[in-house]
Length: 611
Image: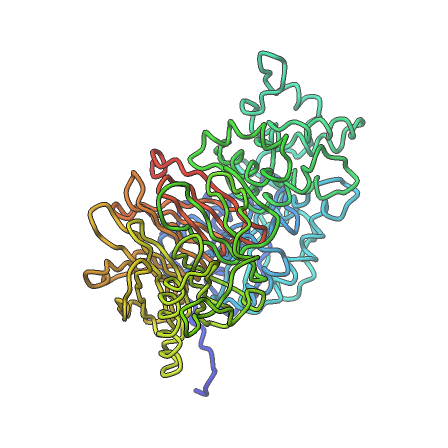
């Protein structure tokens, strides 16, 4: 056998172990199952048949049989009815673990994924949404823009339901499973579109006569916008739905996304901008209307005040809701300033400007961008501006107080920032920078890769390096050397720490291998990670709250996880973008820095981990 040769082993599953099938479905089921198990046959299987023939049911049967069974894995199942190229890409990206991605980015990600991927695509012939005269309304557009490029990737295979259409029929070597002309118990009867007037008439009304979309039948909420696009008075019907915040919360997110993409359709306020920001997450499955309201409200804050105000009461019923947002400049570094009293945030943008913000309101206090100096101290003990802030590009920040901090530059250098003539702060911060700078010169594995902060009784700086070691420094008292421990086998990507009321100092760190570790600094680190994923951690923040210590973790796939440290319970916060930096207050206010700016989210700690 020569190097690089791939051996494919075909394992024929035992069909008797799958869920039962009606007699006339056993032969098509056997054919589909054999195709799915084969590693060297056609990479595309088309499932054909008329309405009611059981096409979708057959794909569901295949999926059900693979659950919990080794040897055959379906990596994603994307029902395509009502999806456009973009919304299909978002859903496939979520299911493959990348998070919602644009079609181009999804193709790049799938191309570099090392897994042999198996996809199921029900209802491709029903794909498309939006105005009928636009390409997005036709399933052929999804095929040309995304499915055909995906099927050109050698390690991807797909079983696709195409009904009686000729979609994908010319794609070379193809397996075909044909269920014929129909039968009982398949996908239902005809596909005629209900009239818009009939759908609207089925919507209950509130006491003051407004549509009560929360009580409307699910089929009405899913189809009424499409019906409005095909009615004679299209303009008035569509405008009425788009102007109703209740419909924005309860209507079909995929239909709304496709409709709002049509620039010809007038919309109230800045709805198009707001929806665009929230759509990748809104098109995920969110049955809870309060969560959909929280997502849409998060996108509207600081953009569309009228819509945000309408949604605020419903959003506040959820376990998280947005308090304020500042979408004026991207933020790359963020930390809570230690100390009691009125809490402040210290934040830096990618150009190196550092400012302080009020935690409760997001109001800017101006701050270090005008007066700060980066560098050490002169021989007479006064602060000297060795490097001006304009030449620094901070990616992490660890405040000593509101006037001084330690920065981790994008060049992997630690730099002290002193905003006033403060020789004590300059000496303490320079000592830490010099220690790690000298270590990095002596040994490449000591190069700093992460910087964080924490502490309530006194401030700490936490430093992670390329060799996987975590170092904890006190910023409130002089320390010649840090407390250090090699916690990871891979470079450290994020660090933070927190003091607890019983005197523990809990340090959290993330490695490049997707592990999150816990180290109580008076003892050895925990022997196993507290969390392990296949994605990179982008930010950590921790606080000792009335509910106990809480850790917030931002991941490279866009997820934000909230971990109740002592119980081990985890809750995922569905966020609209990836988090580049986090800060968490003891009262449960989570501040997220990202490519659009800063957003503060109130966590209801009393119900956060309820199922």
